[in-house]
Structures are given as structure tokens and as C-alpha cells.
Length: 180
Length: 180
Image (cartoon, rainbow over the protein chains, first blue to last red):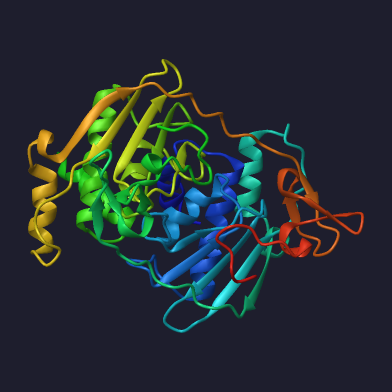
């Protein structure tokens, strides 16, 4: 483990915690197993099955980020991470094993334990075959006839014959309960 | 603009592009208007209405990240960013204005333009009133009776009377087309 990397990940996340340590360790294993460096563009893709703290370490260390669209989030609540290389199609699945020790246990000790326990206790790693996810697409923008703001063509709606954005259409998609 | 910050954001994203510059500028304005520093925990919340490159700059600069659950993504395809401070309830909405200049225009020149154009040309900023989103919750984990992997209680399902995870239940949630 490179102390520098870990400190940088903590800096990005904002604080250290066992969840972050888990994601950090997964990321190191992934880069080693995939024989990849941090993704500059979309060459590496991560499919994460939770959105807990560890995902910040995955993004920081592997370059699979929300904004580059090479981080795919599946809301399964599982400590499972799959990585795919677009170039050679290689894919690995890392499943973190149940961890012993109660939540009440000393936080710093849990972090140290996660970072240093033998790898076979930490997770299982297996090569898998999956379809390579499509690359991010870039869409033109249009102006919403109601609010005058720009909206991606791919998300534009029609209301009373005019092009509008989703909030102006009165439609609120997933995760949205409070109109802004 | 601090050159160091921009270079760090580019390092996190993996490359520089106009989208990243947009998010970077939004983040700087947000921190100034909210009189906040980068979020260590969940004290600042960002609601982003797209998942394009700029979101990486928002995460890096404001500390509102996917893994900390203080980044809320709404799939509206809009260059609109709302920030809320949990402590004082202050909320601002930054809407990026349509940008002149074709996509074909020199990439580096577009980045420079986004970073340096007058603020009133770049965006509108207004104070808004919104409900403060609930804080991230931490759930216990259970073991899936089928695959033996851990799953968050909040995502566990029941199949043939046993506790299973979503993939084992044969249910694939949003964004998932390829079972892993």
C-alpha cells in the first residue's frame, strides 16, 4: 500500500473510514489484476453494486468516474465490483467477504485491518465474461421553450407542441422528490 | 482561478475538456456564494441535473461525492446545479447559460473561454428554498442464502422464504441490462 495514495483518497473523500478503506483496497487489486493504469478516458469501466464510501476510492484510484460515464452504478447494496477493459475485453469481479468485528470496534483499527489483512480473507476475485458497456454519447442541446434553459436533446420532452425540459414538463424522474 | 486546483481536477478526471471546465467554474462559484469550504462529511449537498464531465469537477472541488451521498443526481440533461448547506439551510441554484461557439471550435480555446468569460455571461445564480435532503443512512448487512455474499438489509429480497440479494432474486434494477 502506498501511504501517499491512501492519503490522497482520504483527501478526496473528506475523511477516513472503513468503507473508504474497502474501496481503496478493491481499486488496488483491480488495477493489478487488470494490468491497467488509472483510466484517462473510458478505457476502463467499473460496475459498482453500491454507492457507499468505497465508491469514492474506486473513482479516485481507477479513474472510473461518474462524470466520464465509465462508472456504472447498480443499486444492489452489495460489496461487489466488476471491472472491464474496453481494449481486450478482460473483466474481473471482486466480491468483498463479510467482515468480522462489530461496528462498535475502534474505527482506526478496523481501517488498518481492512488495509492489511490477507487478500484471501478480504475478497474473492474471479474472471468473468460480460458485454462491454456502450461508450458515453454526446448529445446536442436545445433550449426549453418554457424556462429558456438548455437541455440535452436526449432528455427533452414535448409539451403543448413545444420542446421543454423535464422539470417544465412536470415530470420528475427517479431520485427526485423535491422539484428544484 | 487557481491553476493548481484546475490541474488537480484535470488529474482526477483524467483529461481536460470544456465540460470539466464548466463544472470547475460552477464549483468555485458555489463555494464562494455558499461561503463554504470543501465538504468533509455531508455538510454541503449538491444536486446535479446531468452526469457529464463537469460533475467530476463538482465532486473534486466541493467534496459533494457519490460515495458520501451528498451528491444527488437527477437525470434531466440540464447544466443546472443546486447546492444546499445542511447547517443554515441556504440553497443556491446555478444554471449555466447556453454557450456560443461551435463544437468544432478549438478545444483549448473553448476551455480558456469558459474559465475566463465574465460571470454574468457564464451563468445565472439565484437563492432558492428547497427541503434539505435526508442524510445518508447506514444499514446492517445480511448474507444472501443463494450466493453467500453480503447484501445491505435495505436491498435484500425474499425468494422461496429465504433472504437473497437482488441478482439472486432475478430482479435487475435500473441501469442494469447485463447481469454480472
